Length: 512
Image 1: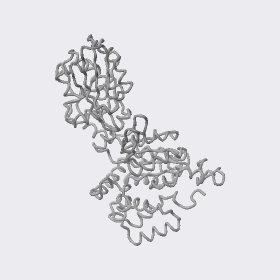
Image 2: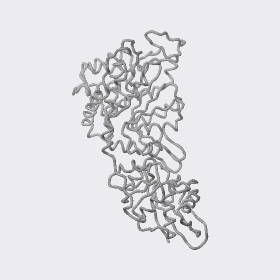
Image 3: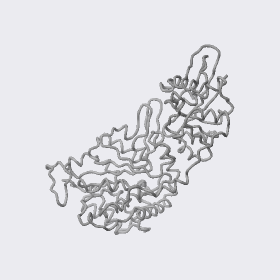
Image 4: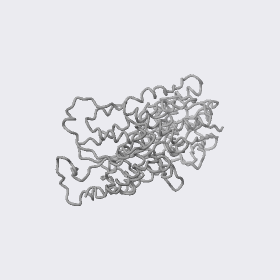
């Protein structure tokens, strides 16, 4: 008798439905698993045998062949235990097979039949809905994320006995209800707020501009000036995740195994802050079975690189293409997988090895030329992709001791949302462009039309401050964002002047 059950394989951040065919014949007494399984799948025989015995049932002592199709896709991990076990029990007449084609099921079995959590439940559920399944049977820990897919019944189980009960007596278990309403109610709740930061009004203004236009930024200042504290609060002023963005982000974290247990959707924009010892593969993704890296985990959020010059140069250089293309391609001999990587890059650094170059009170102890050598650790092409260079100064005592409550993130966020709405309308006809930072050169000339006065002002600034040519486009984009924040249809000299001051590292001789 041949019985079919259905599972799922993850490729990148998407899923592919896997048909598991089980044939129990009267010849022989061995279990064969074919269809390009890895060692974890092959080892399922021992876990399944122990589980079936604990259920008081019997493992077939005949020739049993399990085929996992399509056969040219590698099947990895122990999550296929549940559909294989269900197929073996049905093929041997110990479980009715009539309901098996209604469900996609995945779960790792313990020896006593307990179901362990899996990775990638959300993309599996999305694919199951597209393939016309009525529902999914998944570990209880993964049920909430899968339940965010409307029109699909999700059954969260903690033991294989519950799966057998559902397949034997349809309707005996209740599906998990979606919690999309809770998603919208929780989006404005943060553990940190900009009102916690004393002083630093100019830095807050710079981060507001960065958030409004989706601009990358680098914070340059001495130790203890608040660079990390400010960067961690950037997600609190970014526009809320849309439901589609939340699903995209949750899929990535689910595939990477980074989604907390019993979590439905990621409700806040991600903030990823990898240590400077990270490898290039961990940053952009990779592995024998490609997994998303930190830049993909920061999709729709913020990637914060603290102490930027301390990162290996090779690691920083692999960032250049993903920053521009907003995706990363991991190529292997058999396949190439795309991971999304649309993030805001926020970096911080000291101005010199000792940290006190240009400090208003402390003297820099670095030798001659050491400052420039330190800055040269960050390549020009990477800096070319950073719009805002923000000089952070130490907080004054008067600001630290002040009892005045600073502006809350909520108010800043409202201004950012209004500016993003203007940009969304402006770029509605352009595919893949959603904010000012994403404008390409040909679009920039149409959108950032400046007056003759502004043109002369920019020309004088580039000549007097000896700005590099790469600063030109960045200044235009940032000035357009500043105008959007003020609700202005055109870029004024005041907007241009504010944008010019955010190009510190482009000035010839900076750091000498």
